[in-house]
Length: 162
Image (tube, rainbow, N blue to C red; front, side, top):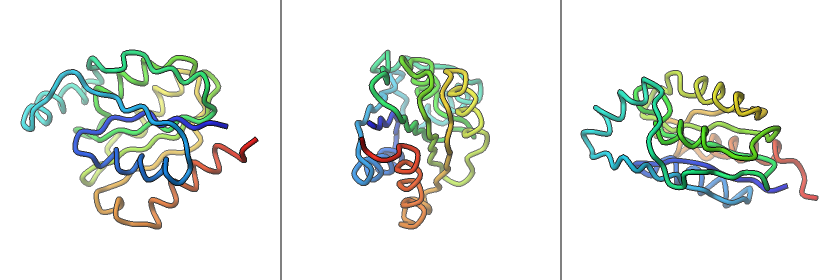
């Protein structure tokens, strides 16, 4: 039962978490590139405002086909307590997502705000079944036990290989 990791990462925290998970649990990765090309300052000023408003940024790939996967892990950094506009766009761009199992993961400096709830609602609107969600602070990313709990969640959600 194949796993797909759909994620956006600006600073590399979300990418490193997804890489560790994929190395341990297997699966394919689709990294979402934000075509807005935020700079350091505009990421927080303009990007944070867009995230709070729930807006979508242009992304590459423009369509994310998960038809051939049984489990989809969706990862996002947290901007202003919300998922990034690129992840908002990626969830909207999901094709073949209906009835797939989903796990939501965010990385943040300290407080995930409403990011998990917002992502869960968007994923459920795609008719996906959310089996778990986790928020990771920068400190949590260094906690092997915490990272292993995500890996275990992915393995349990995906079930035994057939």
